[in-house]
Image 1 (tube, rainbow, N blue to C red):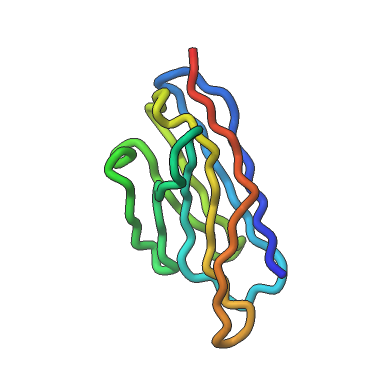
Image 2 (cartoon, rainbow, N blue to C red):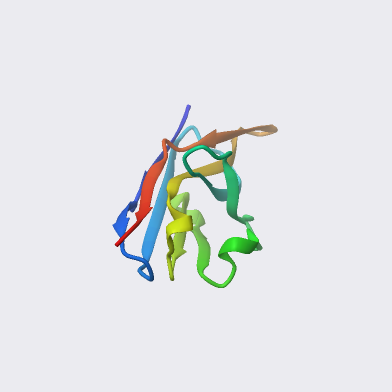
Amino acid sequence: QVQLVESGGGLVQPGGSLRLSCAASGSIFSIYGMGWYRQAPGKQRELVALITRGGSTTYADSVKGRFAISRDNAKNSVYLQMNSLNSEDTAVYYCKTDVEVRIGAVYFYWGQGTQVTVSS
């Protein structure tokens, strides 16, 4: 069993910043890709950013230049630094990880979600 615990969401004014964290624990042999997704009310869940174990990153066009994803492999954690936030960034943010729970057995897991609200 693998658990993902997210933190760092909240209410922020337009132009402000937040840093999300997600830590994985449990039966972990290795972690491969880690990422952040978000879901706004009435919309489908969408990719925000991905990071490979080696540190290669991918971003949605809407967040390029404003958000930065990073990870700490020793802590089984992934982070999302969000700058220059605007109202369109308001959503529930979810982390997702691809976990090898034993050799050859890789599954993906979702966090519980953390609310980010950008409003004045």
